[in-house]
Length: 197
Image (cartoon, rainbow, N blue to C red; front, side):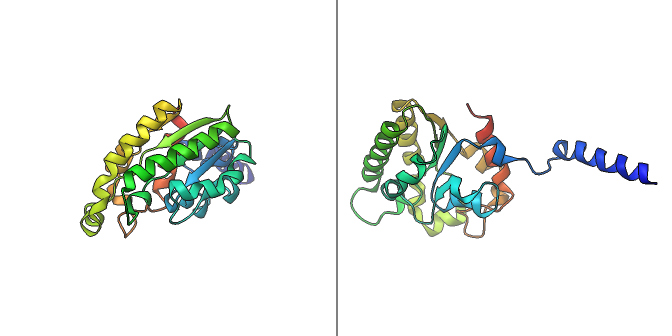
């Protein structure tokens, strides 16, 4: 009986990764820092990575991200994954797209000056649900903002990561507001980033 239990435990341990069990994202992203708003904050909130690796918060814009630059640089990461823009496009005055481009450029200038050997991953702003778009029409500008992000990635020799193939294929994983995501979306997101070089 004891022998059977040991075999069962060993088999379970071997099969768990193959059956989609929890991955060790902390090891996989040990030399990485994630920068962003509440979407990115969900990575640590849902306990996929420790809080210190996720420099993010609700309402963060490309301009506000500059305030936390030291927190990123002090960790001396090999890779920085950035997802900014969703809050920028809701900026209430002036030309939000031009301001976003200006602030994101300034952020990348400062980051690359202080971490010249760090590999950067600029992620697209995820699409929102149809209901969220009806509630807030400014989300209709997401693709225009993503074009700016793609151009910045080229300028700064960063990797552009388009999240929207994954987002569009998993619309059932939106949170109630149609903007954020349920916990089950995060492993798919992290897996996509891990596979992107």
